[in-house]
Image (cartoon, rainbow, N blue to C red; front, side, top):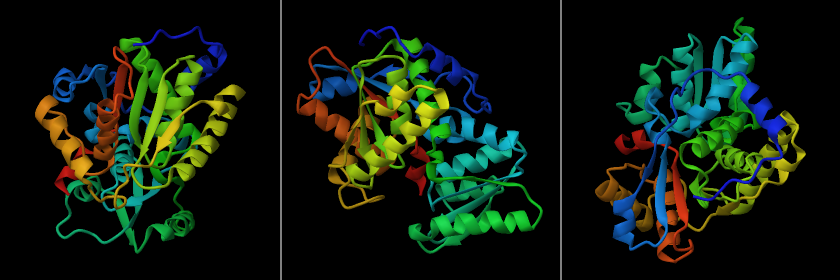
Length: 329
């Protein structure tokens, strides 16, 4: 682990700690060394994993950290219904429905795709959690459907609160800026963090957290779908928003990298590398990743180790963002 430098963002960190959060996580998620995976790869660097898949609430995952901030904002505004979008097996939709149930709110999910018959995995959990589910034909129809649902609910006398895809807003991303402080308190600063990236909120939050704590840690987001340029641009927008929320202009320039070389045939489509990574994690560490999202990020992590990208003695951390429910789709 690297040694953190003294932070020049003390006031911003105090503002971050002062933000209102809804309680979904509780204790810090575990950090574990992956010694058997390291041996299997013949790796020189130390390999660690941050287990957000092990967050107890509603099968955990990275969306839970974002929703702590976003749901608190919704309740402070007097909302009675959370409205969001996602795919049929969206982890974010499941986490949003669970947060709504926890706090006595209604939930309206706009899902692109067709209802599985019978419902399985996250689609089953969405129904068990009592969410109202509106199926739409395509991802491109999400934004219009979200706006339309909010208007209809308001006309019915409800108080809806719209949550964008993945809760990937500057406010939601604060969950991961804060998570860096959690990690540093547990183990110190790793030399590199690798994680799955799509809607860019986790990526921006991790980069912001490293900047706020003055860490030399390299943050690498591995795309599961979109081109690196698109994710990078979105992350920059979110970082600008975080900088405004915390009064820390320098955070907008926080460093990170996006790697889109492991997308393969597209979102939700396994690759040979993702299948191998999935099996290696299970058979060496009894850690489960989903078929495509976290599996592709882990495939990149493994490829980096094999290519000697990390220096001998360095500490490389894989941030497991959850999604294991997708194994049962």
